[in-house]
Image (cartoon, rainbow, N blue to C red; front, side, top):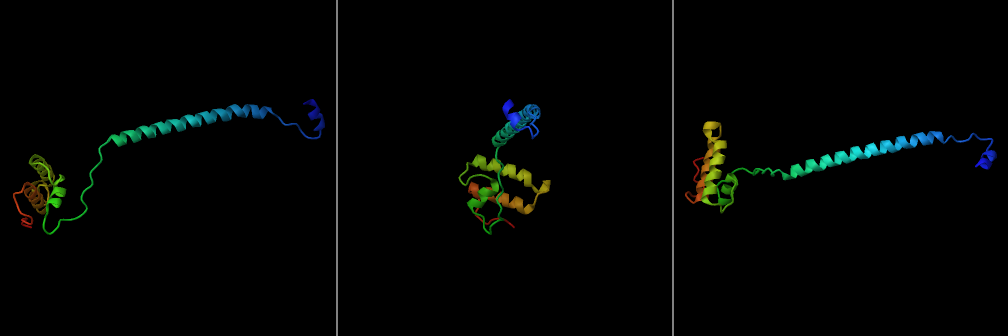
Length: 132
């Protein structure tokens, strides 16, 4: 090494002291960045897991009412299957009517359609028997 310094006497020698002090600083910053990145990844994963466990929100039927109601439309209005049991139909009717009752600020038209849907699914009425 001494021989190399003698050959390069015309040039200033490199100072290795700066690199020795910078290396631990860079290593420390790298470890800190990795720790913060890992922490944020863990938090994102935990948020994803809790979001996936929540029940999916049902989307509403985007269309309007048909001219004459059929079983499919009646089931969509009440939120049940076309071949649902009478108990499920009654429970769904009650739930939807509580939310849309005219005495509670709901529409008379919507309430009549809900009642018509219940009648069709229970087999009590014929399609298109709404007074509106």
